[in-house]
Length: 313
Picture 1: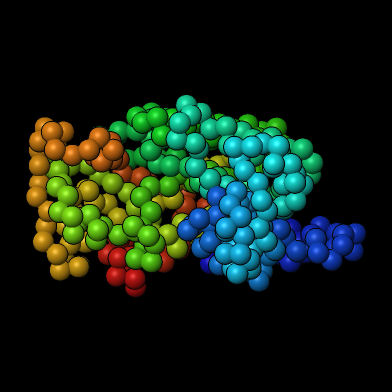
Picture 2 (picture 1 turned 60 degrees about the vertical axis):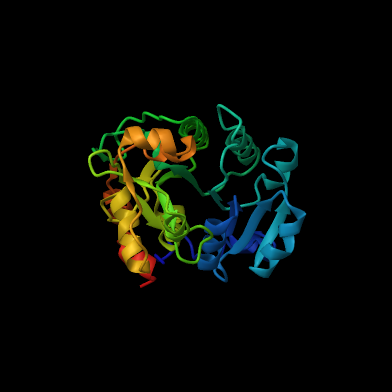
C-alpha cells in the first residue's frame, strides 16, 4: 500500500489539541461498503478511524467485526444522510446508481450532504470504464471524450458530473477512478470459472472485443492512493497492464483451470443465442491506458496481469 501523505501526521487532525480525543484521527467514510469497500477498510484498519454508511441493520455487526463504525442511512432517503455532514475527513464513494434511473440521485444526495458543514479533505469516486463506450479497440486515455453506449454508463456520467461540480464548488480534491472488470479468486463471481463451467459461448476472433481488468486488491489500493495522492478533479483509469480480447481471456483462464475452451460464435450467431445483458458486454471494445494510475498515484500493481491475479501470485 502506498505511504499515506498529508500536511500533518496521518493519525491527527489539523490542530490535535483543539478537538476531542475521538476526533483526532483521520476519519475515512466508506459509502458503498461491499467487497471493494471492505478491502479498502482492511488496508486502512488501525491507521484511521473507519466509518461506513449502510442501509441494512443486518450488516451492522459485519462492519463492526471489521473494525468499522456503521452509520445507518439510505442514499435513496436523503434526509437519513444528514448525520454524515462534517463527519469524515476523507470519503470513498463506491455506491452504484439506482438501476431504474436515468441519472444518479444517490450521488447527488451524498454531494449535497457533504457540503452542509466542514467538507472532507479529499473524495474518491468509483466510476466505470463503460463511460468511454465502444472505441473499436482504440486506446482510452483519461482525456478521451466519453461516449456511453448503455444506460448504466450514462448514469455514471451523471454521477461523475455531480462529483466534479462538488469539487468545483467546495475545492475539495476529488478523484474519479474509471474501473473496468473487477476480478479476484476470493471475490464472489470474481473469476471466469463459473461461466466456463456453464460453457457459455464466446465470440470468434474476427468479432471479438478488447476487455480490461483490475484485481480487487489492486483496486482497493488505488482507492487508498487516490485519497491521499489524487489531484483535484482528476480522472484515473484503474486497470492493470493486461491487453487481451474477451475470448482470449476466457481461454487463458480455461487453460489455468484445466477446463475446455468454450464454443466460439460469429456476432450474428451470438445475437440469436445469447441474452441481451451478456451481448452488451460484447458490444464495446477498448484498451485502457493506465499511465496516470502508475505515475501520478505511484501505484505499483501487485497483479499487473490477469495470469498473476488468477493464480493469486
